[in-house]
Length: 280
Ligand code: PAF
Image 1: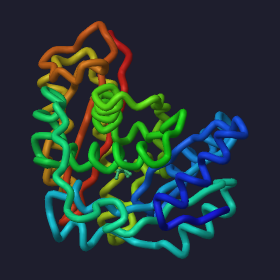
Image 2: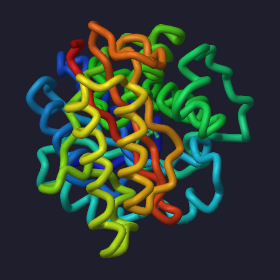
Image 3: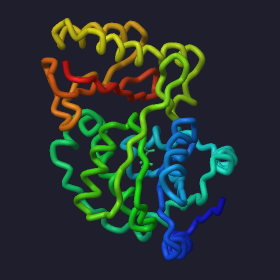
């Protein structure tokens, strides 16, 4: 695996690969890699000739400095597991390489998507995500961008950013990888203590419970799931059912595909998850 720290070196190398007709798949990450990330690398390896992974803890997408400081960083371990994953190229830029001279950020017109769920509870977060992915796509110019379904709203936001910025990249969304007890794999799980780790699986239990409550009115099903989460010690930011295509928040079950989305704190660790439901 080749490792690049400078965008120019990476871009020159990728131009050579492209001139040899290699298709490029890109897996952006913030490191602290787990099997969820590896499933994205695997999908890219299967679909593309060359896979580029980036590790960059993006400061502009953290709306809370403490969260940025506590974000797990395990770069040596990440490099070892990437070497074994068949990843071809790793990009590990410093902050100045991505954001030179405090350049004025672009504003992305994300509209409704930025006003709900993660957008509502993490103001500015999606602007930061779009900013870094826009910059990375300009450097890498991949044919395919591999993203995890765990960040459902992020996938929709980045799809919109790609259209707004005319990138020639298609998004491939890969299903969420889960631990044996259903907890969605996430870099943040590393920060859970033993007690929190046991409680964390209740997020998936709550999602499943809602999934099986189609015969109850949606608002009752939601209340039951919220009680389950608060009894387990969660502080819930949101638990909503939305139209899976538009993310419009629903108050009644729909016939079209829906998605249940949740974000909740255990201590100071914020976990998110979602479950897609076929329409009833
Ligand atoms: O999902 C993530 O890990 C990040 O939001 C991403 C897409 C790597 C951008 O920093």
